[in-house]
Image (cartoon, rainbow, N blue to C red; front, side, top):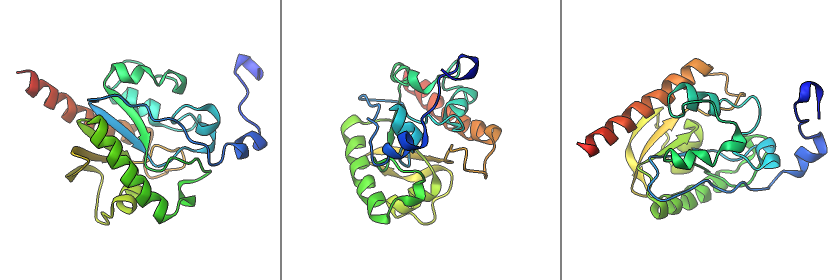
Length: 194
């Protein structure tokens, strides 16, 4: 244990040893939203939990946007399924930076992801990273937000990459953008129950 009772993170050798590992997708049929990262980072692969690096802003954005009633820890990710939420990645292998992925890996990942979406049929696919979405799906003009096209039959929404390395978005702006998706998802659910 590290100081103040917090568990110690991985050392450099452990992180490097996590390269090329995969983290199982968190999937179930009929999810409201399937969140899709670019690929697991080394810290995430080391823990086996999505978006696990302490500086990653996925879990805070999910909570602050209203998708969860409290901020879940990465180790609590399975609770998302009860909320109709899941997590997967475009590319499955872990790397230190998404920039290490080749265009071919992103295209292959897009094909695999399309298959996952066709199988599990989430209402929405939320891709976390506009540049990765553009490259993986060949949509060079894609912008954040609702997309006109579908992937595997599911409607697509693009959100910013929540990595702490993404300096273009603050925690507040991430929460706002995640909240816009949540509002649409809830409005659709309300319309379906009427």
